[in-house]
Every structure is written in structure tokens, then in C-alpha cells.
Image (cartoon, rainbow, N blue to C red):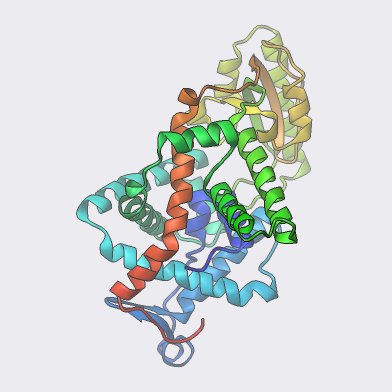
Length: 381
């Protein structure tokens, strides 16, 4: 399986599950003459075929995702490579759909239903949910179908690959104490081969030594828990929820006045949690109650970061304006950083290392699936 380019990987990480769904696009059935002449089969296997327009839709979806999240588009030099990667993704989806058991489908449906419910909760109303999907160019029914397909892929991969991965206690200790993970072990093996061949004075040896040191340092930093702040917030958006465009000045002024009310009323003695429930437009309000625990690195806007880490516990800020809107925050608790025990983070480390191992095994698994389903790539997309 072709590795994802940094461009695609970054887009998927930025968008998570929703970004992966967006890649599928919102295709419409082509007319018959288009089907015959301009929409050829580019790959087929036992029980399925993939046509050109499906790959095109995936690429268009990625382009839209990159544009909305990063202000980028696919470079021309990478377009062919990305088309091939999207074809691989479609092949994997089709083959895993056929491998799914009834239990897989039940689990996937539950995960997809939860994902859609969370998306609707963030939109705060059914109408807003539909409006946001329409603005993104995807119909609600197709979005929910794609949610199930994506959940099914993840469920089957977890059963067929991830469930067979064993992370030993020694691997956990190596990561926790030395910063050694799967990529670091691979670099270490390369260094060992170079040493055996008496190639320690070569640029390759020096380069791999540097890479290993940098990787170990970064991994050890991941174990450290940074200073954090527990806070709650009234948030008032200055952007249209569906389009993302800035609101008109008069609407911004009304939001600004509402945020100032939160400051004044909290300082007059009103309960800040009640003000959040009354005034905040936080899309995650129903699940979080407006309360978050954040590190410096996780706060997107520097103006908000400075306020959060400058307030004392119990203090309420003035109105803080960011590109997203107006914020009024109350610090509940300052949480000093430090190094947690291995037992405290064992579950997270096992998940991290198991994920690396699954990615390592995926190309061979994909190649075997193509043999099992007699996949024939008939033309380059």
C-alpha cells in the first residue's frame, strides 16, 4: 500500500473522522454517455469495480478539505501520486466491506450513530446540522452512509490487525525510560548494521544517529505532562456557523455586548456555570458544559493563551477577542506539569505503540487482500 503523502496525512489528522468522510465526496450518477466514454473502470476485483469518477470525487474531497482547513490545494506535482493513493484507499474500503462480519457491522453502526449524534450535538440543531453539511457539499444521507463505511473499515482493521498486536511490558518500559518506539527501533537496527559493516564514519551513520537522538527526545517529551489549566468559558462566535464567513459588524457588536454581560454579571456574583448555559455558543457545550483542561500548546490563539495562563484560580477574565469570536474565561485550577508514572499512562502508551505496529503491518495486509480478491488495476486514474 502506498504510504500517504504528508499532505494527505496532515489533512486527515487535522480533520479526524470527518476529514476522512469528506474525501469520499458527494458524487452524482453520470449520464450514460459519460459512463461509457469518460468514466472507465480503473480497478476491479471479486465482487466490485471502481470507476474514474469515484477517484476524482476522492481527490476533489481532499482538495476541499485542504482548502478549508489549511488554505492549501493539491500541488500539481503531487496530483498523480495522490490519485493513486486515493485509489488504494477505495480498494481497501471495498475489500474490507466484503470481509466484515455481522458483529463488525453492528459495532460499526453503533460507532457511526454516535459520531453522527455528536456532530448534530455540536451543530446544536437539526437545521444547523443540515446547513453545515450542505455548505460542505455533502448531503446528510450520504454523510451518514460514509460515517458507517468509515467505522466499518476501522472495525475490521482493528479485528484483523490491531487485535493481533502484542505490546510487551519491555516495549512500554523502553518508550517510557528511553523514548524507544517502532521507528526508533528501526533506526537502531540500521545503525547496528552499519557498525557491523564498519561504516561508522559515513554520512549515513551520522544522519541516523541524529535522527535517533531527535526521535528519542521527542518521544520522552510526549511522556512529560505540561503545565495545564482547568477552566470554563463563555464563547460567542463571530463567524457564520455554516459558511465560516465573518459576521456583519452589527452582529459582532451585539455578540461583544453579550460577552461583556457575562463579565459584569459574574463579577456581580452570578454563577458562572449558569451564565455559560445561558449565553455560550460553544458547539461542544452539551458534552463539556463549557469546561476544559488545556496545556499551553493546545490553546490555538496566543491572546487567549496569555490570559489563561496569567489568571489565578477563581478569576474571571475581561472579554478576550480572537479570530473565532469573543471569550470570557474563568480559571478553576492550575495544574503543574511533571512526569506521570508508567502505570498512569500505560493504557495510552499501549494504544500509541499498537497503532504504530498496525501501520507497519498494513501494507503487507493490503497486498494480501489484493491477491485474495484478484484485484486488477486496469488503468492509472
